[in-house]
Amino acid sequence: MKRLILICSLALAFGLAQTSQAQFLDKIKKKAEEKVKKEGEKRVEDKINKGVEKAYDEVDKQISGDDKKKEGDAKAKDSKQNTQKNEQVQGNTAGVNTAEAGSSPQAVINSKYDFVPGEKVIYFDDFSQDAVGDFPALWNTNGTAEVVTTNLAPGHWMKFIIRETIWTDELLKLPDNYTIEYDVIPIQGKDKRMAGWHMRLFQAKNPKAWDAGTAPGNGGFEYTVEYYGASRFSTWFNKNECRAASLKGSVDDKTLIQTENRKYHIAIWVQKSRIRLYQDQNKLFDLPKAIPTDCLKIDRLRFEDGAAMISNVRIAVGAPDMRNKLMTEGKLVTYGIYFDVNKDVVKPESYGTLKEIAAILKDAQGVKVKIVGHTDSDGDDRSNLDLSKRRAASVKNALVNDFGIGASLLETDGKGESEPVAPNDNATNKALNRRVEFLKL
Image 1 (spheres, one colour):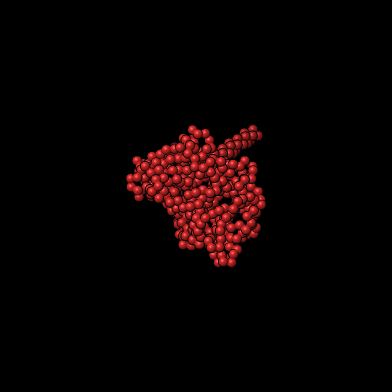
Image 2 (tube, helix red, strand yellow):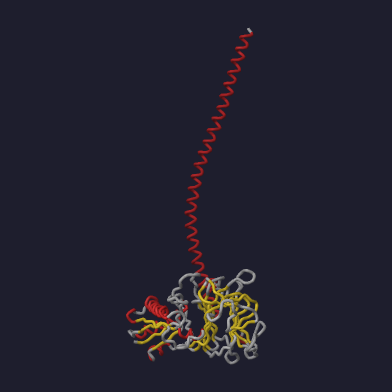
């Protein structure tokens, strides 16, 4: 009996063990199945998500493209509206500046660009005669500046980071009509951000020193680039008969904002009381009654209060009568076609001059012209001769490709440094020797 009870107990225990094991195995199986199911669902879900994300990406690209197009259209519309607004307020004909830093500029940028530099150069300073690290010889200051070189542009530059002033040492002898040009690169100031910069044209009270105050000298014209890059102008007069003529204004076009470490070409055209100011190929201001000629005589150029690098300061007088020079006298000498040092690419600021010459050639109908390049004496003779020939060829290409002049009407040649019109003894005379001539055949 005891044995039977023991056998039954063992059988029951074995059965219970098998049942527990089976239940345990069932639990493991269910968990495994759930895990596989979840992983499978997850893989499917991942694939679905990836597909959705890809679809979203494609839609986003299309939307972004549409947004960029809309943004570009909006900017173009804003630029047009700002330009129209400026034209109504101050005769501005500013266009859009599309050049990028370091890019190779082309000759034709803006059909409204009408600046033509003066015929006779009376002042030029590219600081090539100054040693790097020195203060430039033709300038004076109550602060500090130094001549530097930079990877941003070729040549020597006058660099200043000041709250003081730097001015042309000798008084300028300017007639009623003249042009002033220079290149400028805005840079960081003492607070490690773009500081902006200021330029003044004014009549000095102190020929041998600086004129203090926010309205120095007897009065003049100020062009200011703010630390955030926007441009504005003002005039001031310290004589009773001039005070009523004071002006001020600004440019609202965001496409014309200056940025740090980029080169800009500034051109100023003064015709008696009228002042036009250009940034690259864009006219920023056109002020018919800026400087009353009966009470003020500009004789000084000054930079101040900011941080920038300046070079290629060029002042010239006399509006060139190109048509008469070429068609009547048979020879037109122009200083309004520009190239970088040792380069043969026509710079964009040459557009106004090329436009005038092209108009003359079109009116002449069949007149043939020879374009002749000339250089100064810097460098060796052979290199200068080759450079002058390449520059003449570039001028021809610009007239043919950009202005539609027939190639058969234009010949080219180069004389290098062999035919100077002035001694190559200073920066101004060297600028006179760097020229392009058009000879009627």
